[in-house]
Picture 1 (cartoon, one colour):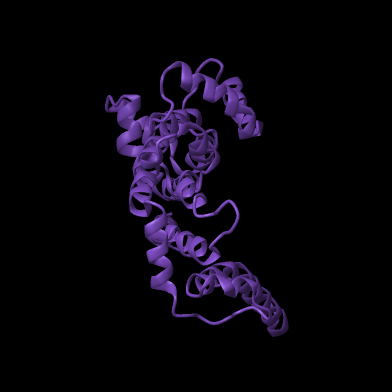
Picture 2 (cartoon, rainbow, N blue to C red; picture 1 turned 90 degrees about the horizontal axis):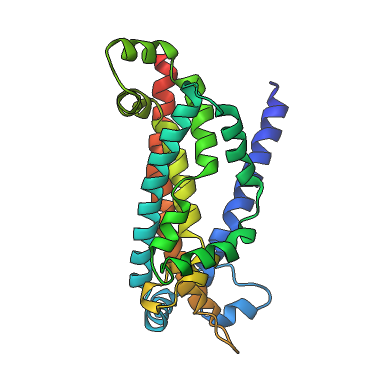
Length: 273
């Protein structure tokens, strides 16, 4: 690759990065200024000194810490369960033969094509019939298994888990679950790291379904609680931005931790191969 092509490539990458991080930069700028900065022209580009004032407004208007704790519990439990069931199902689809395997996998994939909004009313009626309205079970149990998670793990397991390892395990008398636990899981760690990030962020940012099934304000997840910062006639944009910024910090921490594990596992696998 010529020097000119490298310069063009790196320039495009830098521009792409700047465009990607600009909304987050603007979020921080707005959270450190008062609401009048949202209507100022030309826009305010520098950090202000109102951050802690805005934080106090957020804590005064909504139970922020309680909502964040609720969201953390729901997101963590949902992610752990999705990782277990999706990895187990994906491993079986990838490495075992059984009647109707292809048809069942195709059916699983077709569920990804159905918009989530179409299932809201049936899901709500079902949750109401079994008495799970205003319960975290309605947020966790319906998402117990992820069709995307099964697909992702299957695709990864097909190339990452060698059949010779499984055949050797069968000779030693290992059952399916022991092969999954002792052989598949260590190999699937990079795929599981990605799936954990993907699912945790999806559950953390979910707004519509928690809004529908939760009635008690003390059980609100973070996105539902932050929506209450928007007033009927006037909105304190600085408080909204501050709450959004605070709610984003755990996701950034998770991404930094899990992505490092994700990259290191891929690098280790490449060296071993």
